Image (cartoon, rainbow, N blue to C red; front, side, top):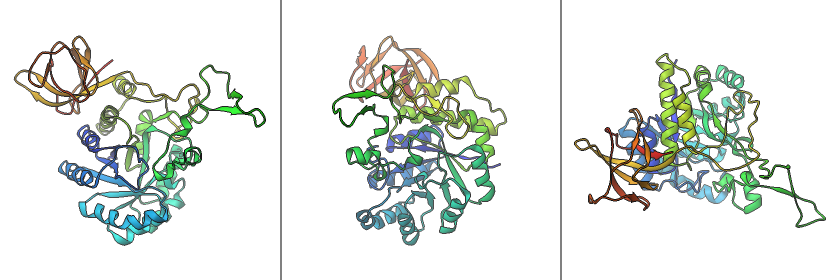
Amino acid sequence: MLKPELLAPAGNLEKLKVALTYGADAVYVGGKKFGLRAFGGNFSDEDLKNGVEFAHSMKRKIYVTVNIFAHNEDIEELPDYLKYLETIGVDAVLISDLGVFNLAKDLTKLELHVSTQANITNYKTVEVWQNLGASRVVLARELSQSEIIAIKKHCNIELEMFIHGAMCISYSGRCYLSHYLTGRDGNQGQCTHSCRWKYNLVEEKRPGEYFEVTEDENGSYVMNSKDLCLLPCLDKIIESGISSLKIEGRMKSVHYVAGVVKVYREAIDSYFNGDFKIRDEWLSELDKVAHRPYTTGFFVHDESGTEIYDTSKAKQSATFLGIVRNFDLTNNIATVEQRGKLEIGQHIEILQPQNENFSQLLTEITDEDGVAINSAPHAQQIVKIKLSRPAQVWSLIRTF
């Protein structure tokens, strides 16, 4: 049985480096245009080139999303962009629009992956895309384990599926609600996440009178989905013959990317080492990053349902404070780029890319020049902190 690829999201160059450092085999990213996360930071052309070089230096892969549903003006600009992606050596492009697919096929030799936006839910559709020249298809999230096994049985092509992250209330993300309410089209990468807003009913002849959809004092989020977590089903997914296991989250934080990637890296490796079982520390880690209540979605029937009715806010049990940029082994001093308020007396945990995590009391902070300080309140301030043991570069500092 082939070991599946662990595919991680990267909303910018820093997140790309974190994802690969924490164990992803490949990352998927978006440029400044033509992807479905227009507000996720994304990559300039120069960033894409640097990202390809970094990924390939680690013998990993990088895929670029070109998965909008294109309009005529997009078609005019796409050829130069696709040729640029080929020139810098990206490993594949993710596409959902048939016209864009044909453009990429005719103009380049790029490997073509079909996005989940194409709503692939049966083996006949997979066969069509394979015959058109796709090397991989991303299955819709709305499939059960038995349906995925049946598709694999009938098809000889790489299959990719989402195993973790936010889910869309509309079928594989094909949603027009945001465009209808705000003029920002989710299918053009500008989704306002209107499905997570709180809604009331208004009766036609009584404008201004709002009626709660339920009697809950918090209101009702009738289209608000839970987050997907298929860690408990990972052995069954691997045994289904999936080629690539995909984490959602190009708009999520560095903390999210690092924590989730590390968990699934360890879980996949443990399966192939013959000692797979769900570990408490994995579940704890997934609770520490920002998330909504978890569900196994459509893969396994979940009696608790897939919607959340009381809030649209994510929760997390840990607060991200900074990234270790350098470490002085002689003095056990970490140089940290601060992202949250570090202060003397905090109980901190160090999340490491490969090594075991550890915790300690923060007793010593200096500024970049070595002057002792009690706290570091400024965003991205460089400080130095004393640690009880060595920490890897790219380790994350957090508190609870």
